[in-house]
Length: 109
Length: 308
Image 1 (cartoon, each protein chain N blue to C red):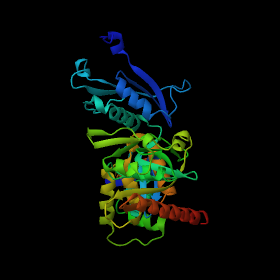
Image 2: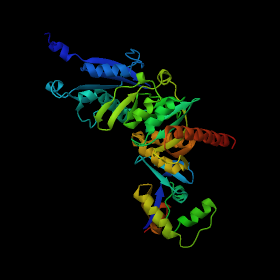
Image 3: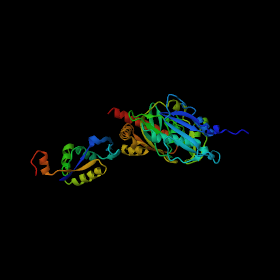
Image 4: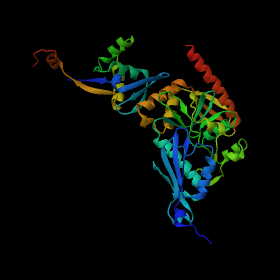
């Protein structure tokens, strides 16, 4: 079992740029959040796609054509926790390898 | 000596009056209050059977005996607010408070900003500020200096087209502002002065006739201004970053949260279309000059946008 995070950016949010920031209207809470580009990029890569903290830097780098910096996980986790606190991302528990095999039609144990 | 009959004492004056998109039904049994109300709203469409009243505001004695002993009145309205009783002599103030409250708390088909606004050539400047910052005086001065008054208290933004709808109620002037405008507007457009109100001395100024006659003509917002009247200051303009403008405008809206998604989109569109400025000014003349500068600047920004 491990922890992953996902958002529902396209389903639950309206996003509008304002200068260098983004206004994000979150439908479930009815609140508007003003976020930097890094937070919106995180919401984007997690949109309906649960990823662990360890996986996120590489996906971000691939999506946005940047280089994954070493030791960035701590910053990612801090941002995720802030976004989780306002409901913009959810922590989900993902299955371990044996459960994944079951899901893929394997025998499992 | 002839005494008024019980029936006459129970009589309530009533009328409907339309101000921009809102039709009010106003009632009061008090003859003096009624006379002042009728005088102030004499140029507005009244008792139009084509429109249903949307809100009722009644100003009536707090009790039967307080009609005669230290006369005191209450506001009764469709949307009841924290209205405190007022002396009967402030009946007009009570009507204005009640009408404001209905618009601010009930009119959820528009994004409402606590702001004054003036129009020229189909476009408008929105002045967003807290009470006491001079936004009403600024709008009054400009509207008696060639601009059309859209409103001195609220700006109604229609969410689909992003237009500002006129709501040209009599302008509420406080304390020294009454004297400032007395030098600029004809005397017959003022109410009497109401002393000792919760906001000090109040006076109401009817908008110029053209502003009332054109109350059905909306305007496209061109720029947003956060004004601060500071006596003795040097006139100054600062371009406000959009994120900061968003925070200030959301704080000034009475129904941004209530409107949800529609409010978010209307506000985002407004910010997208309008540059925002902060101005500090020591006099109406200085403010008028600053408004002209912002008008030019915002026009240039829009031209630059159009040409990519």
